Image (tube, rainbow, N blue to C red):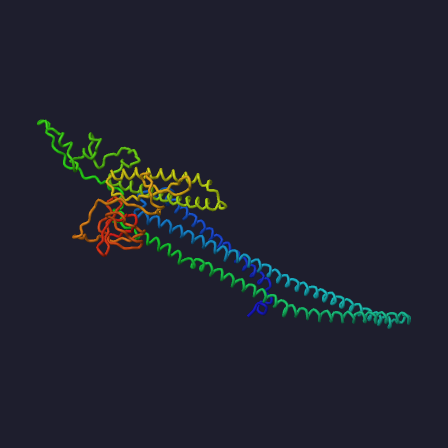
Length: 531
């Protein structure tokens, strides 16, 4: 069934229906636009929320950042940020694939519909013009026929009049004959116009308008199909990102399952353990006997009471919940408890070693570049490197001084001395490399690899006859030479058994399957302790 056959006489209805269909497309486009604005605002608010609660710059070194609960919260914020990105993607795809596409298609439909309606109006005007011609010829025929009848009646009356002359009778008959001839011509013209109109009217109702109505029907059906596709896209666009959104939600769930309260407790202990012994019993001081307290004050070993712990503050009581006074931070971290001090000193030494290694590598590179320039002047001027070489040498001397200073403090604090000893390079006037030991004395050795390090010896000895049961295992993240006594070498990716946990000095005792034991830097491995 088609409009041209069934709705041949419903032009106004078809015009109204097609206009209403186009308005529905416009309404849907507006609806999707508002949806995209909601998605964009939602994504923006989620991003702002994530940014608000995320770590500020420079706060990633805070102690809390090592807690699994804190890390999981940061993971949730990151996943939510990714989730917001998917909402933005939904808005972008809806705008591109629905709004813009439908708007362009809508304009094409409007132009096409306008053209069809103009064709219909033109056909209607042509038919109306033909009808006017028919009506005009009909009225002329009617008028001329009446005139011919009157002329015939007058001629008959004149012929019967006895007083009329022969000339009058002949004139009246000629007039009647002429009128009859004109009337006949008008009749023929009317018949011709009627035939023409009927033919054009048939063409209008059975051919022209049905074709136009069927074209409008096809246009409307294409509009409905396109709109249906827009409806489907409205869902499919969101379905397309659902797997990624699902991964974001799974990441949030995983963040919750990654929280380990026991590990968090261990981190708190590691970060805040002071290393002090608990105070002993307060001795009874019998002033009536005049007890000489000099001997107890000079005794060694474990403190006998809170006064021994407080050092200078002997006049104050040692209470766990007493209000702490503001502590002055010192360069040697002497304001910290013993274990925390050792950790901070070790951390500072590691930083200095890395910076020193960088300067040593830079020094070696500059030396090689200077040699190349001296042998091939066309490649560059050796003198242009003098300032950089001088600055690098100064940096090495400064870092070496800091290294010795912090090593001394670490030794005083009871550390094992993990610090790497680097051999630095200086340059003589000829641009050649001279090797210097950390104390500044020159060595006669050839230029060594600056990455080689000499490790201090351990004081701890191992007993071969009794093996301690492993408490966990660890995986090496970096190579470790184990060149010093008491240490053990390892390769990146190697798995070792953990025999003794880090006691706060930065070293962990491990064992191989073959029974070899030794200490390794805790920061070089990832450790999993058996529960």
